[in-house]
Image 1 (tube, rainbow, N blue to C red):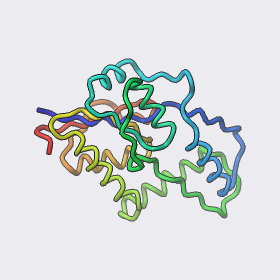
Image 2 (cartoon, rainbow, N blue to C red):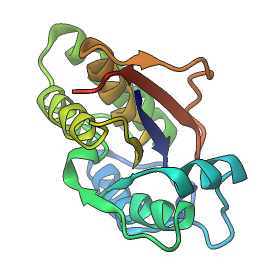
Image 3 (tube, one colour):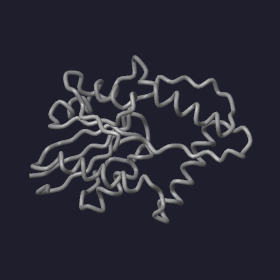
Image 4 (tube, rainbow, N blue to C red):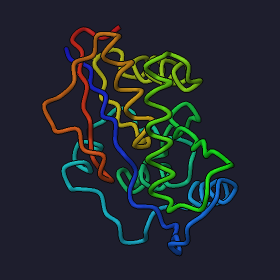
Amino acid sequence: MTARILLVRHGRSAHVHDGRWMRGPGVHDFESAYDAAGILEHDAPPSELIRVAADAQVIAASDLPRAIASARRIAPTRDPDVTPLLREIKLEPALWLPRLPIEVWEAMSHVQWSYRLLRGGHDSIQRSNDAAEWLAERAADSATVVAVTHGGFRRLVARRLEVHGWRAGPEPRSYANWSIWSYSRDGAR
């Protein structure tokens, strides 16, 4: 029997950014507003994802509103298992830099996370390991788990699943909203 874990990036955020460039403290304000928002009212998950979720034994989600709303959109008749373990990595803006677009702040944070991950020095590494173990426990006994998480953190969880013997699926590794990264393992446990 094969256990499956599907790591899904949430739907498109309902947070509307006005395009203003910002300094570091403004990045924290942007992130707080983004984290408080759900998803766009008419943003629908792919029908294939809804079909797979209907047969899944577990629907899980990060505790951020956009992930919870996405899980409910994927499986509207079920309550997701909500956990902070699946939360996105926080942006870490350098407070001394000039005003920049949010996309630049996100790119710089991505470079920062990648560097720290290579050196093993980011606090999200332990959380990603805990999240991978939490998901694997739910996938025991050949269950399918659909876990709604976030773009950056999904990359960390995926790496930890692979370290623990889970095989990545053949799909392209897209960071698009609603994208799925699948993992499987025979004889889970």
